[in-house]
Image 1 (cartoon, rainbow, N blue to C red):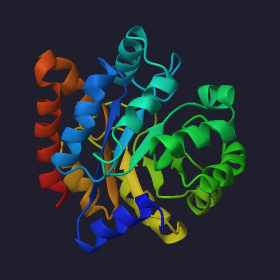
Image 2 (image 1 turned 180 degrees about the vertical axis):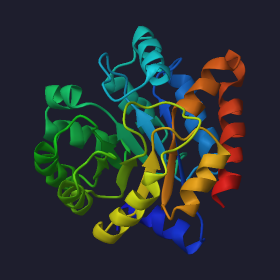
Image 3 (image 1 turned 135 degrees about the vertical axis):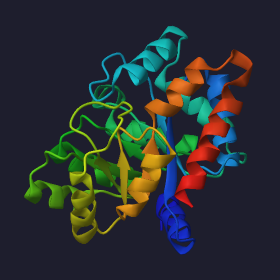
Length: 264
């Protein structure tokens, strides 16, 4: 059983929702990212999705795009992100899922990237712009290195393809709650509840909902819909960006505790 699967099983036995914050590595610098990762674990995060900054992030809204731009301007590279993560071995125990795009991954090469990610201590990968057919090529490479390749399903995904994605995903299936890019939403689309149930019936792995979750109320809503996990990105990144430089990790932990209370 993979680290991600183990954590979901622990959460299931505790009868609660897995809380999965997202942050952009290198925003504002990698030292702060390391501090925030440790702070999030201390504040009750079950897993963390760690964005690797990229210059053309097609799936990301303005908040995450701005964070990626700041990280790139600070000189953050895929290699430096993995070195930072590797430095936390023995201190950070929750699974870290790397969020990257296909171009950086293919530039390095699927096998080499997976080897490097595994060496850093990562537990999984999310590659939002990788077509299912390519993902099916990458998945066994990732698995051979002890990584779960998490696949995404959108509200517009045809039912037959949704079933295929759910069966191919490892660790969990990532259900995108909105049509469009990442970002906070005042309300979540009600049809997501039906999609959660449909995916849970066809997918052998847990279902986590992301994109558009902005606070504790929506975390509760996702839990009530029967999802196994909630991913919160833009709302956390926005709070971190607004915090004074010496209080970013503290602010991230404060928000994480609010979300954790709603997931229990």
